[in-house]
Length: 224
Image (cartoon, rainbow, N blue to C red; front, side):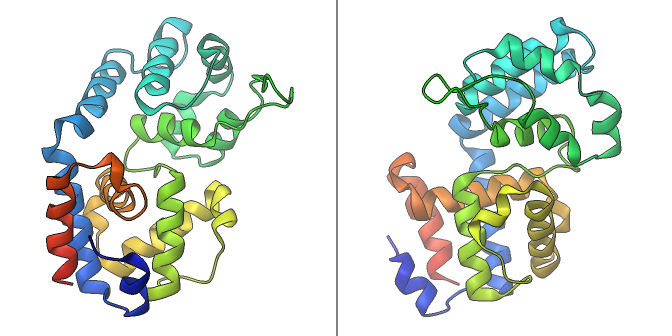
C-alpha cells in the first residue's frame, strides 16, 4: 500500500487525478454490498416514513441510522422526540443547514461519565443527508482528516484546520470548494460523500477494507 506521507510529500495528486480517484472510490462503494446495503435499507425506511412529524415515522429512521452508522445514541426515543421539535420537514426541503446544529444539540442526552449533553454531529448530518442527499453532505471524522490533508497539498480552498470542520457551514463550504475544484458536481453530495469515505478508509483505516478493495484503490492511486 502506498505510504501516504510520501504520497503527499511528492505531490502526486492533481485536479484530474483526484477527480478520477474519487470517482473510482465511489464506484467501489456502489459495488460493495457491505458498504451500500445499509444505505439501501435506510433509503427504504425513509421512503416508507418520509415525514418527520410523528414519533412512529421518526423513531425507525433514528434507530436504523444509529445502528448502521454506530452514532452511539443510547436513547433513540429521546432523540426521535427531539427531531420532532425541529420542524424538520420544512427545513430539509429548504436545505436549511442550521437544522444540523439543532439536531446535534438540545436533545438533553447526556454522557454517563461527565453528565454533559453529547454532541451528535455525525448523526445529525447523516439524518439530514439521507433525507436530502443533494442538499447536505455527511460529516465523517476520517473525511475531515482527508479534506485537511488534500487542502494542504492542493489548496482547493482557503486555509482551514481540522477543528474548523466541526462547524457544519464551514464543512459544507469546504466540500463545495472541492466539488468546484474537481468538477465533480454530478456527485453532489451523496456519491462524493461515498468516494471521500472510501478513500479516507484506505488512507487512515485500511484494516476496515479487504485486500482486494485496497488493491483496487491502490491501482488508481498509483496511476495518479
